[in-house]
Image (cartoon, rainbow over the protein chains, first blue to last red):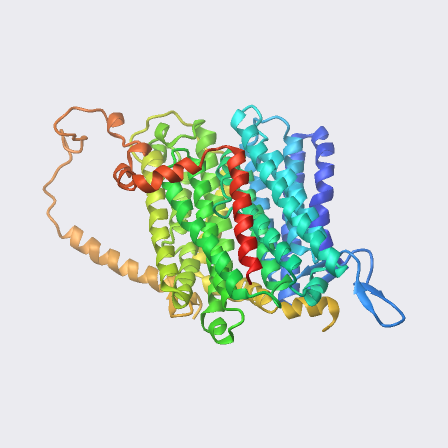
Amino acid sequence: MINEHLPALIIGIPLLAAFATPLISKINDKLRNIFVIGVLGATLCLVVSLAFNVFDNGIFVYVMGAKSTGLSLPSGYRMPIRIILEVDGMSIFMAIISSVVAFFGAIYSWAFMHKETGKDKYYTLLLILTAGMFGMEFTGDMFNFFVFLEITSIAACSLVGFKIRRGESSEAAFKTMVLYTLGALFVLFAVGILYGQYDALNIATLASRIQYTAMDKVALGLLVAGLAMKAGAVPMHMWVPDAYAEAPAPITMILVANSQASLYGIFRVCFTLYGLTISTHTVGWIIIILGILSMFIGVTMALIQKKIKRLMAYHAISQTGYMLLGVGVGLAVLSDANALNSYGLKAMEGGIFHIINHAMYKGLLFLTAGAVIYTTGKRNLNELGGLAHKMKFTTIFFIIGAAAIAGLPPFNGFASKLIIYESVYKFNPMLSIIAMLVSILTLASFVKVFQSAFLGPEIIKIKKEPKTMIFAMLCLSVIIIAFGLFPDIVVDKIVAPAANALVNSMQYIAAILGGA
Amino acid sequence: MIGTLETGHGLWSALYWLLSLAVLFLIAYFIYSSGGKTVKASGDKGKPFLSGNEMSKEETHVKSSNIYWGFTEALKSYYTPLKGEHTGDVNDYVSWFVVVLAVVLILAGGL
């Protein structure tokens, strides 16, 4: 019974729990925390269950409030009109990331937010943000995609400005809100263009009807630019360091997954919605160029940062570049079967594998930064030093996260970067060389953080990090090491199905239109 | 074999890598342990040395801003305009967004 409704439950449970959270807060804070963690734990279990279902049985189509996806007229004409959730390998891959990150974010928040007021609103927004991400990843409808995009945007902006006593937080929330609103407006405009031409909002139906008219090109431009902005691609990245640096650390970790949900939106639009009609080579190159700019400008800006979370935020931009590069190469050779089989699909696997790796190690790094801020009250690296003397666990977790993001073996970042380097090299060696250079600069940047904050004599008084924070960081570290030691299992079980789902857009369309 | 990843061009196994690292560590430890044990860490040995000046440990800690000073100074012509573009002004953020939209529309229009 539950199995039949998994996609709806995965979105619905955190959404309903969000509205129950303020009520439970009235009873007891501890009970509220247990409730939120329990809800996100249960959601994670449901996501895993749905993942097994999708990997075993193929695309899962769920129709809200009905059994059939649409209406059939006596003439035989059939059209999907209902709210449809369509979960394929790529959707469930993204949902796994969102659920893991939200679960550990809630655990970490227990101690991290202990002294804050307004935690009922904090947890409510966290759950809404999580539900919004699931909605973006599962929906088979362009308008619903916009609705969930807006839900995540509103929740994310509120959480960025949550620590309102810091003026910087409010400013960051305002800037993020302006950019998110503009991006969402672009997406809505694009949805309107598509609906006006094809009388449909369903992605599969639109993909089967799209003619690639001049207006479709405008819609494509609006969608790519709007979603790339929210994914943090250069040169539309400037809100990222503001937002990531000012949001509470566990929220920053979830914001990374939220940006990745927008990245998923770009991939869905380019591969599935427009995949049958556009010149994938040119659009692929647009994504590759955005990726290269993000990688290089992100890492060089990170090198000169003095505040720990701003530095890490620039690295988040840089790492997004790797994902864009890998998947962009796959898109660029999508119409060339030989190139696709030779290296395009591998490049996509590398880019997609990097999405989950990035969510784990960047999440861990933001949590270590949160632990540093929590225990010292300082964000500026110039004011830090000798933390390794007292914060032994955080130091070890930081080393693991830093080594993973820098692409050092045997951690997970190395495995995905190696796939990207080798496959992208066959497409264009220069792109691969730039990617390697960016990795070296990433390592240099984290050596700077490690030396200035963790090594040296103790120059400030610090308190020990709480156990729930250590537990969340430990779990992410274990995932990073496990993915690094057994990357083949991750690639075979969840990454390859995600890449195949993007490449085989006809399966996505046929799941709704029945082979039309 | 479990743990072996196909990279598209070759293979990667973190387990073999760790095994190789362990062998290298043993060799390095053997060389290290064969060395002389005459040096004793006492007196002034181990204290910070900065051109003969007496300094406390706290004073010798290299601050974040000083690390890679040479690198950023050498790339001043790259960093000056780049930092100039990161104004923190939301109007500029929106301007860049519109510029990218225009470029993407032009490129998409030419397809």
